[in-house]
Length: 356
Length: 248
Image (cartoon, rainbow over all chains, first blue to last red):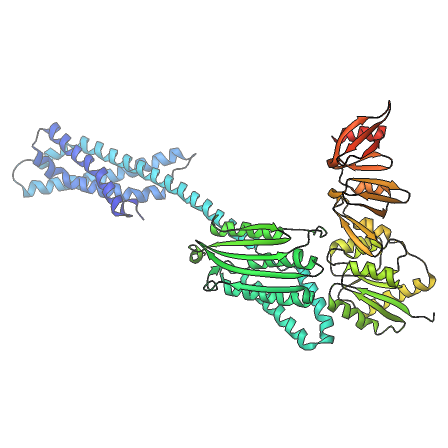
């Protein structure tokens, strides 16, 4: 769209640019020709309005003739020819107008007055044309810069989106192998338990796959997902794995990014419970504290455990994800105290609904 | 062979032990002498009941299958390793061309491994698997814990709690604030695996933890001694002195 018509403000700016040129021309005409102001105005206001129309339409010429390095001669020639043609037509029409004035107003020789002002009008015309193209090219350059900036921002946004995707927990193949290893002896021992295990696994997988492309979930669904995960692990670890959920009323419907609990609870099982001879209790608690939903996952751990391989990877990824999601307002905290490991996930409540 | 083969099943997962038992139903020559849910129980059981054959899981809490082997270093029974998919464990086995069973265990593979183990038991060819333990140890990282078997009990020492280590025939003594612990191990091997930033071999027979050192004193014209925080003094050899200087 034409820059002068994009908003009311733009139109005012265009008007403010045009008025001094018009008034200046009329005053100059009066001084030079020695006629009175009203005659100059009658003779020149319509041509000046026409000139405003020309100044406006020059935009389309500028758009069709971009200013490029290495093509300056062609650029100058094209604009010069266009300008001469347009101004010739403009002067012709203005001269015709003065002829009309001659026929309709008896007093004064309008055509003669017009002829004497030809140099002034030509100068004004050239000035207006050049000023217009100068403004338009500045405008176009500015637009190009903004478009480039927008493109950069767009790319950054896409990059952080894909980073978010990549940071989402993927299903560990070990988990699948281990679960399959459980199923095979279970089928012989207890087909009904085997089918229970398979249903936990399949619900776990469905949620994991579905939410690997989604960006929203609720705490309720996340907890359900974790229960399925722990349901599977319970078959593996038996009595060594105990779980406890303590969810504050009203927290279930809070929106959270999907798959934020899994890496934390996986960590609790892998580095906590499964390293303990007697096992222990994984406790998952949710509370609302000031402006945040806080999810607390705690478990006992073995201080003398063999150093596990690849520790903390899942938690680091989660930290990055929450940072990207909430622009620094969400995050996780980890701490060890008296052979207990605790992870706190902070979800800002105000931003909950804004996640795309 | 007329007598039955006594087998021990070691796995922290009940279902996995059940699976081995299920497979063993096809082998009447083998009698299940016991089941253990962790490495500590396994070490104890082996010393008390001397089984002929162990089905040993690798992934277990605190003491894994490799640790159990390390602790049973003498009089090892025949071992059939069973492992879940774990690239590190598989690498260790493959590097030593060891036989192992991958979960979930197939009947055919299980029978083959059992047959091979029985043949070895009859031929009584004691296989050396001590090397496997060394291989499993991540050589790029210093020892993060020292496993010690005291009769049937297993103790895990944190190297940082060890004040000094003393050579004693085929054994080494780990001196801690409370007591010392004996382990069958060679000084040179130990020196290689300890954290070189805190442990220094000051003498043919001594490695010290420099965090417990107070000062070095001249002893005679050619020799020196170190004084430890608990007041004890240890001799420093000429080479030991230069190593100590380098470290500090």
